Image (cartoon, rainbow, N blue to C red; front, side, top):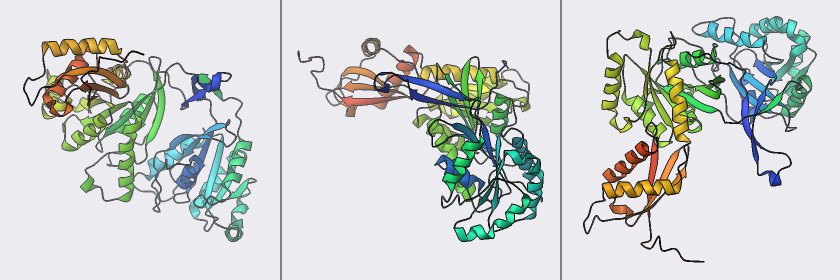
Amino acid sequence: MAKKEKIAPDATETSAEPGTAAGLEQRLLRYENLPMVALVGRPNVGKSTLFNRLLHKRRAITDPRPGVTRDPIEAEFLLPDGRSRCRLVDTGGFKLEREGLDDLVVARSLSILSRAELLLFIVDATDITPEDEEFAALLRPMSRQLILVVNKADSPDRDNQAWSHLRWGYDDVVFISAEHNRNIDLLIEKIGKRLDFSKVKAVDVERADIRIAIIGKPNTGKSSLLNILLGEERSIVSDVPGTTRDVVEGRFTWKGRGIVVLDTAGIRRKKKVQDDVEYYSVTRSISVVSSADIVILMIDAQEGLTEQDKKIAAFAVDEGRGVIFALSKWDLMPEIKNTFEASRDKLRFFFGQMAYAPVVAVSAKDGSGLDKLMNTVISLYAMLNRKIETSRLNKAVTQWVESNPPPIGPSTRFKLRYAVQTSVNPQKFTVFVTRPEVVPDSYVSFLKNKLRKEFGLDGIPLSLELKASRKDWNARKKP
């Protein structure tokens, strides 16, 4: 695998260039060296609710049951002054009695402590548990970088119940209600005063980051792929299906290109999803497709393509996203000549309408196939953003029509007048014809295939819309 330059997660945004007319010229900016603020505490004290409240969006899944958050979730937070930025990290809960994945969750949460510039130690105003006491003792050496956040203090009356938390000796304390937005402004003010923003740099970016979403059924190796791409253990990896719940995001550079990669929860068939948390996890996994450029659909190489894989891929195509079929766990496949070719051909046979989509064999265990996977990502992204001159497009369409004329008949005859590219990423084209309603699907497929071959769009989905055209389209009125 090619050497990667790993950098801390950051953000890319578009902002107006100072001094330009009406701010019409735009800059792509990425903010580096953002101070980190970590939300820590035992399960079910409202860490994810506060995380969402600060961001003003439902970024983390919330549920009354404890232990819903597993992987740390990071997001950029712009303070109300409109200039200061930091990174918020929502962590899994600290537990004393552990089972299942709890050891992994707690270990991942504790690993955040040394990286954070500021800790928000969140507790419940109505209760102090042995876990609170243990965690308070663990955090005492870090008291200078800590704010004690007493949550669920829904009214001043509850403040009186919460004074017992002060016995831990922390100097900076704030009573809030994340659910009811009480004293959130005060907390944000405290955060702003405690952080050092002097090292934050706004860096001009020539090209936007490529966003890739890793999608697939449970246990196909999505989190393992994310971790090896980032070069760190960002997502918890386990044989337990459904380990990943929230969308886990990271950023790295590959051959000079910024890549944002998103690990998602495994998507099972709807009738098998009976748990509310899994329902929200799957819903967010699907929504990630809309914000991604490229979708890497992880398919267990031994199991092969399933009906659920087809549905996931079809949704990505409907959104106009580039799709890469990644045959995962390839290290477990027998070392027989032409094994990959046989697997690829079988996949394309059972999913013929996506025969154009590239297929790559990968193994997160030994790193094989990752160079080819990332080369394919770069290639598809270029296709998605390729712009075609209208004159060149229409010259090609004219040649296609001459070599393969539309059907001739009183009820099926139509003429192609004009073609335009209406969008990139996703790629969309509009063809103006005299009678759109009689154009057969086979001729639309013919035009799509020609577009892919002629203009180097052979690895991506594209949309072709037919619109009615006046017969005198070319007879333009003179001014």
